[in-house]
Length: 76
Image (cartoon, rainbow, N blue to C red; front, side, top):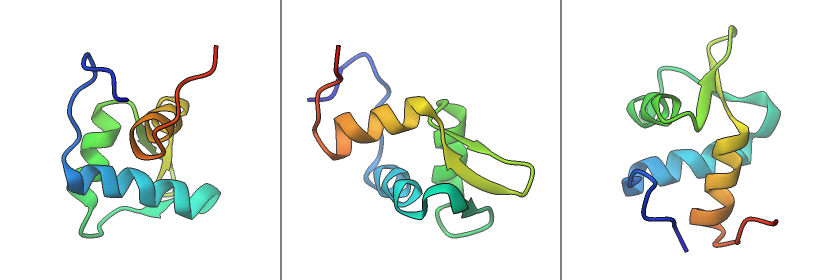
């Protein structure tokens, strides 16, 4: 279950977060339709824009994906 102290993610941003997990280390290029969501995820610390202008998950993004998309509880 999602912690209520975390900012809400719109459905489109949840999908963008999930796509970041699917692309893995290759990252997701900037300038796609989900660019506004990727920028929002970056602002929340869940993604980062690399020097090659591709987005990747941060450790916080991976945790958020596990809890909100996969519905897994954080270990520990």
